[in-house]
Image 1 (cartoon, helix red, strand yellow):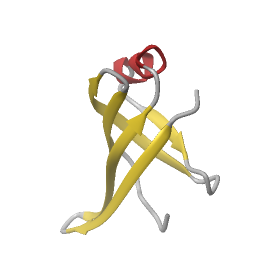
Image 2 (cartoon, rainbow, N blue to C red):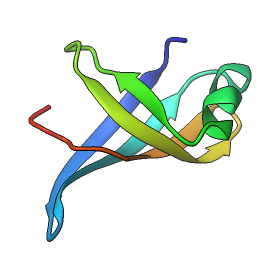
Image 3 (tube, rainbow, N blue to C red):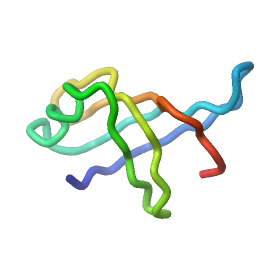
Amino acid sequence: MRVRYRVVVERREGGVVAYGTLYGSYAGLRPVWLEPDAQLRLSSGRRLNISVTDLIGDVAEFESTGPVGAI
């Protein structure tokens, strides 16, 4: 499924984390929201392990669940 996304990367006390927003269709985002873990493939080809934390209509929020390197 293709989505648009906005990713924010921050350095925190425990390391580097990423979070952001996915924009797509509700029908496409809902199955991802129901899964505990998913991967977001960025336009650069890198993959980011994420968990969708909220879904309202065609907009979902996510947080990284694994190591975040340079994006």
